[in-house]
Length: 433
Image (tube, rainbow, N blue to C red; front, side, top):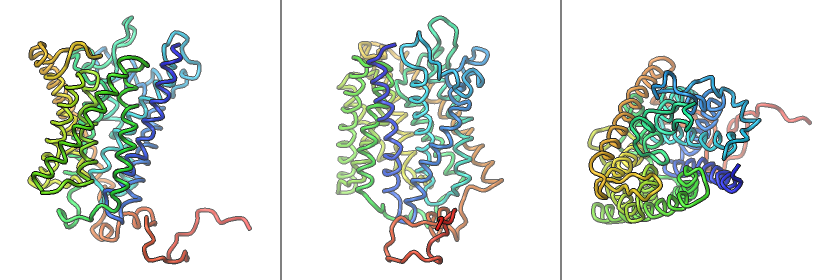
């Protein structure tokens, strides 16, 4: 066992875990004051649901031997319950349990990303059910396609994108960001617009947004760097390209805002950081530091334009999941076909570096496959839930505020009301006198 790499992936896992409260704060600060707690609960609730499913059968679905060798889904029973992880594997470079928890965090973060698209108007219980169904029927299969590599001895067959197509996705542009982004689009089309949209409450706490973005940036070093699965040169290159792309994207987004709107905003700067992080995720091990600057700058310039499309086409993507994660993930995935360099850890050259059109074609096929599958299955799941148990809050309850309606709480006691039986729900258990 590689003790150094084990320590590195342990640290990377803890960094990725910090992305959970980071995302909750980032989203929570962007919504109005009456939706803060619901946004936080949607993030943490989805993490809890998908975390349980990951242990029961999710890890098997992603990393189990592919059914029929087709590369579509792993054997659901191969690692069910993760009981074999306790004994470990004396021949493994990394403890199997560590790989399981590291990849579990990818699954929970991806699902939680979708929450921002339907802020202010979705019921909490049905949201949790949606996350479980979505992880089962969308994330687990797509992650198998992208992250499951064939075993060197042929004992395990992995996903078709990683092996048969051999497209490059170092840390999740397709399986994570495009997957969540296009799922968000399908969900908002089913759930519909908020009452009064495009008018909406102003962000309640921009400092929360900035703090959340900083925590996400920190965690992203673990997300991308840890995907090298070893402490060494590859992880170091990945961290450098991740940093470069983020910086370039912030500047590009702010420049677009200044030219278009006449001012550069805090919200825009933080959104630019996330756009750069999203775009470099698939490409972080495939491009040079200069290529990372180019990808970050392109994402930072294009994503604010993509965000504006929701007003033109009339879909209410509350916190710009489609404009940032779908658009940014697509940009990063496809641009590998242009900026990829053979000397990078992924080892494939793009069109600008003598590789021809081959890699560009692979990246395009992988992107289209994920977009079509995720959109279609997500739409079916959301439509079925909406027609049966109902996803959407009623107009009256939406007007009352989702925090109060769904959780019987308010984030800020602006009126200084005392805790009385009329203003505070009774505790679940009475204290012992």
